[in-house]
Length: 201
Image 1: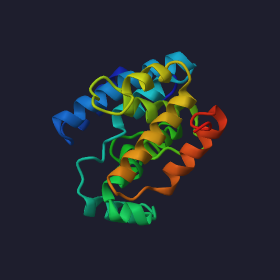
Image 2: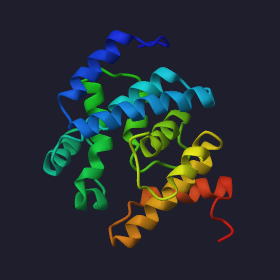
Image 3: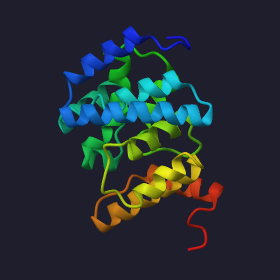
């Protein structure tokens, strides 16, 4: 798609997305898209890649658990034990496939940001971190632990914001007695180690 934002392409993707997910999810996606673009401006990232990845990060959210598992296998994606137990987690990986096949996105920077936006991963690219964080802090979000602090940190030190988010997610899943994907733990441990967040506890 080049480096210039193609408005017609974005509008086409936006219209298609609006017809395939709930209104609440659609408004969330617009919020993530705009927030991701702002974070890209802050950190010198590619605003276009952030904009598109934010818009399409949840493009597979309208699919059932069974459909997500089937689509994952069809795409050569081997679901983890946790993903088989909670198939909705696959929406990020399957979403990257749908973004390419249905929405015509061939930019790997966009596709990888969609792929990892749920769990994160150690040593994320800048765009992956941007979409991961934007999904958590976009304006329509509310009620999340330390949300105000994380929103501030996101524009101050994005690596620390990632560590804070992962820690909150892990604590929430533990309290809910739910399975935790190993990659989320690995992501927290990596970003905690490079930022020092949580190291003194």
